[in-house]
Length: 333
Image (cartoon, rainbow, N blue to C red):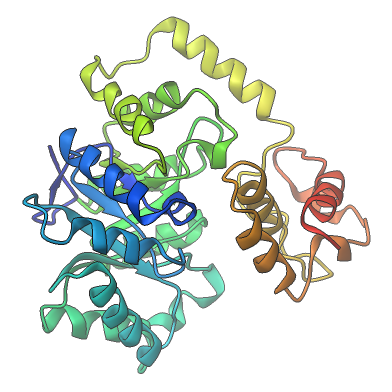
């Protein structure tokens, strides 16, 4: 067990990510929760936006003689919306108190406004004072957001993508660890792009500044495989390092790290979001959710005018125009 930052939460370094569970059934979720207990995986992360995930998990953990540590999150940005979501989460998860409630997927342009009167952070502080939540966290795909959150010291934890091909958050994770702010890693398999799960998780756990990684799991057999890395010596072999370099080279020309240097787009397309949704569709098998989310966007991949400005700004020299065409083909015009 490892302490999550300076909170009083002690967790196993491999946790459970609740995003994919929404495509399972309640019965399958029950079996997964039983398997988590068997392997003493006590940290569960879900979100209001994961459709049925909170409800499934709440039903499965109710009346279990096991002390799970539950984290969830909301994308509501105003006071009333966040307050309402906290209440819904408590009901869904069947808990009197939620261990960690996080502001979810915060963008840099909205960060400062979250602390204004009648905005979301106030609702989280009130919920903490009322004993409805224990700790406050933040998640983002933006390194700049996480850096500001660490510097402001308003959060107990930060959550960011980090994996073999997405290492742009390395320095801010080290900074958070130095300040004893809990570090939670999402997207450890790069949205399914990394197929060797054991190596991908070992790569992350080998970093001492990372507290917990939360791979998404929707099948019982995934649990034993993922947690098995904790039985090994958490140190990469030379052979593994060579293989990791090979993976980086192979994915390097076709994988968006969501650094957002390509932004802003002159057509106001959220370029990294397009690739994220395509990844959910093709690698997480969340087809209906991804298509519906894509169709709700004001500007889509199909609106690209192929000016090429984004490619000039991309530090990874990605063929963004070609990748956007593929998104439009996969998710629809």
